[in-house]
Length: 271
Image 1 (cartoon, rainbow, N blue to C red):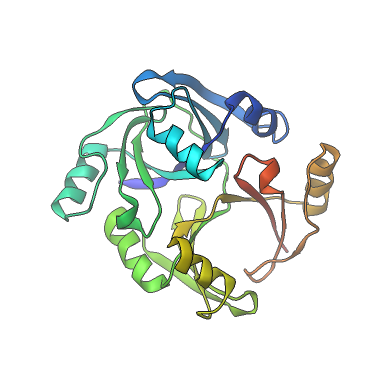
Image 2: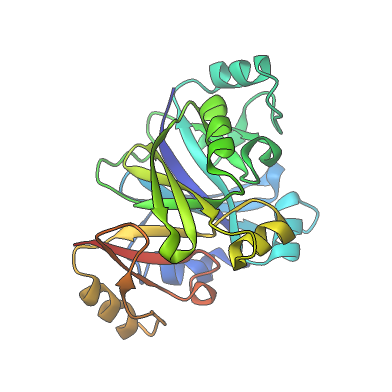
């Protein structure tokens, strides 16, 4: 069973440099930090409520992570979902003919892991993880939402349901922001499927250019958005002023992604 989003993984040039933001400025706690020699990567997990952020730093130049970083820069690499039985999940997916990168589990920072090919998930690289019993578990809300940019919400939602067993819970007309939003709930996090309203919008043109893809961002709910903006600005970060978000009754502000190692941080407040 898949029950929550375990982490988002981002590729970085230097995990130590990135810790200066995620650990020291954001205030997150490191739950794991080790080198996985066979994958040529140093991985660092930082806890944020029930979720985590994974920093992936290549330790060799001849690996997939190194090539990904070289071609795309610091950016979101994958979204990981927690399961209590990864072998059963992989057997189910193979029986359904879902395209996999890993047909059997391998060792990873989050435990036993396996990847689903992004072709099966509308451009999103999905990792499944069965964490060990001693790993971080949180009960507080971490991510408010993540997002994936898709051409058609209904088509994408069918595949999310087939592959991960996660169904569409709501559709929101945010056409004043140029988008439609499909919401999929996993744990305390909402996975947003974001569809452009028109075929000539910037989002539609981007999807036409690079294909369907995940947004390299996480949204975090804050109780006092003005206070959080002030806190980050005091730390020398560039933060936008808050404005109404596409979800009714929300305010949002964003930290500059180029200052947050390619993972855009969105602050969201429900009013």
